[in-house]
Amino acid sequence: MPAPDDAIRARRRLTNKLIAAHEAERLRPFFLADVTLIVGDGGLILGVDAVIAAFAAQFADPDFKTYIRETETVRLDAEGARAAEAGRWTGLYADAELSGTYLATWRNVRGQWAIENELYVTLS
Image (tube, rainbow, N blue to C red; front, side, top):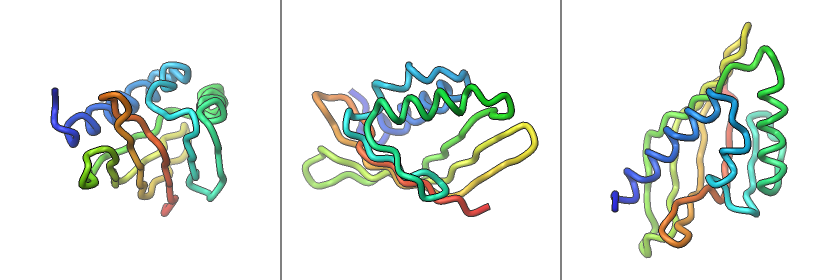
């Protein structure tokens, strides 16, 4: 079994690939049912169904290319049940690029890391 830091980084890379492939439904296992997501402009998305619907809407936009999240740090709690991932994100569109920082809370559920919360801040 990989170390938690490695497992979370690997899951993040996989979500990047699924987003680049515009595979909204395949992202579902990476989120807890009651996930909370604060998007780059401060909007709030509650629950996995709403998160998947938001991805599907983005993927339907012909100008949307991908989001890339680059993990900088992963820190575990003392029990090894939760982790904080921080990094940089980039959103690529046909005629624009957005970027900023993010923080994600991961929870270990039956040996699998899933996203509990994410906060994205658009800085450029």
